[in-house]
Image (cartoon, rainbow, N blue to C red):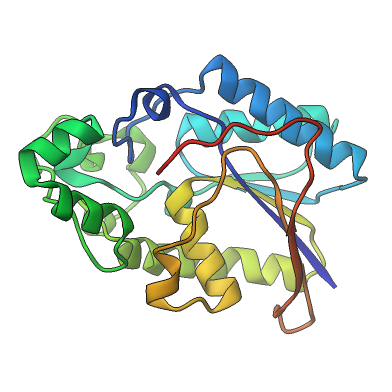
Length: 239
């Protein structure tokens, strides 16, 4: 039986401010740090051990992973920081307050971009200094693969590739995996695991800092899934 645990990063500064973050590299707040320490303690107290940790290229997910592994006394295990687990790219909305975006584009459009499966926000200009094509994190990634805006469907495509070439083979080899990532990249992975419909995935939220535990059979089908009980309620932020 395979073990896979998914955890959304702790609260970031832009989560707190209500901004669209996407691929901007924003760090955790003190609340976010405490959330991840609590998640790590909960995993430790429940007896979890891991052989591989997977995260994105963004510091809020990476630091969240560090904090959990520190609590588990497992900072020595192999770790992969893969851009395909990055948050969904919010295009021209990046950095905007959600209220500002609604004033600029209309509440209905913003709601569709945030919650719809196939809706893609306006594209970030390619010459924008925040565009990933100029970011050293992604120099080894073909420029044509780097987005300037994404829907959840687009995010699912890259997450599925990571599942196929890295996560699934490691699980089949018996490795116990901890994934620290983002609301939308985790929604994409959950959709794959649970075969959730395009319509139903729009209603799924992933709370900050609460481990989601999966037990999978030999064909990597879900046998059991549950959120791990924490010592104290974890604060959640909206997507």
